[in-house]
Amino acid sequence: MEATGVQGGLIIHVPCDDGAKTAALRIDDKYVVQGLHENTAQVVAARDRIKSRGQYGATSVDMFDGRRLPYTEGLV
Image (cartoon, rainbow, N blue to C red):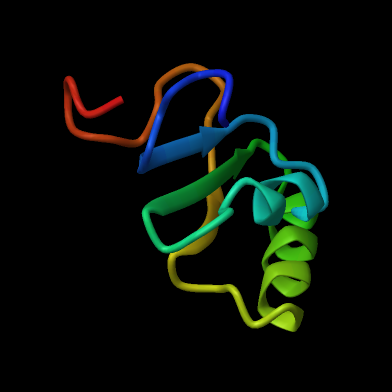
């Protein structure tokens, strides 16, 4: 993060796999992180991992259809 100069904002992690890296991307309260994955089992596993670390909320995971990001145009 230091090398990028980014000091906060929305981070989208695709594919989020088991959630370990997704959780690690939220280094402080200036960041909101959302992981996306096409596989339901991976989404469940990632959510469980993030919840077990007490991070779910500002760090979250959702399904991804593999084609279009599930955000308002221009957000990401």
